[in-house]
Amino acid sequence: MAKARSRPAPFRYVPVADLEGRPHVIVDGAPRPGTVATLSHWPGTPTPVELWHDVSAGIVMRARACPGALPDAVVVASIDHYDADEFWTPIYRNDRLQCILEPGEFYILASRQRVRVAPSFAAELLPYDLATQEFRVHYAGFFDPGFGYGAGGEVPGTCAVLEVRASQMPILLEDDQFVGRLNYYRMAAVPDKVYGGVIGSSYQQQGLALSKQFKRDRKYFTKAAAEPAMQSS
Image (cartoon, rainbow, N blue to C red; front, side, top):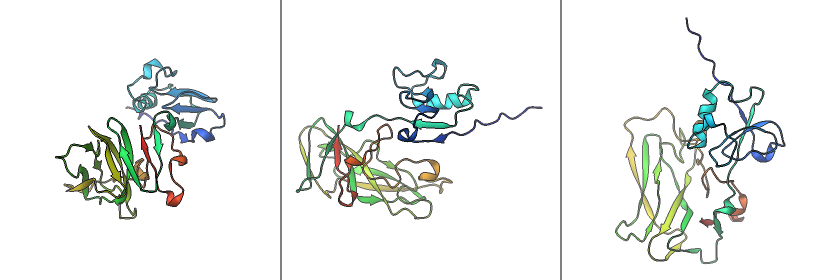
């Protein structure tokens, strides 16, 4: 007769700013006051060698699967991030609503139009004109079923965040300029779970957003109607 292995107790997430020194596990960052365990792939952090993995998510999974790797009395976990100021320069809106994309620079832009993908479809963002090859519109232009839509249409669309790089010459980009098109593909079957907060999706109903490795900072958004500014690396 075998006894089923009990699942590890869940941790309660508390934002870094609200930890206030209480005992916690820090993920994807450096220890701070109150840290009792660090699960991070960042160089120099005191992550246990036996839990090491190329990414922090892998370290967390190993820790959860290893009895005694995490202190039983600690129920709080938090995640640290890089400061966006160290890697990105905000480009604020000007009167002409234009931006010049410089060759070799990498930009994060948000679409004015909102994207909606019903659960029975997936979508791919393609450049408007592949023949020009002047700038690349997106590096991972796939949208999962339910993106900007939800399970039953409750989400009124989500901005597409575009990763853009000019290739050989400066490109003048204007507000509301047409730079790409969406190809929709019908799914063989409607998935049981769709993109959204229920499964922990990070970018549903996003504005201009960097990846999860960076702190979200409201100073990168303009005050008027919370319209996002553009950012470059």
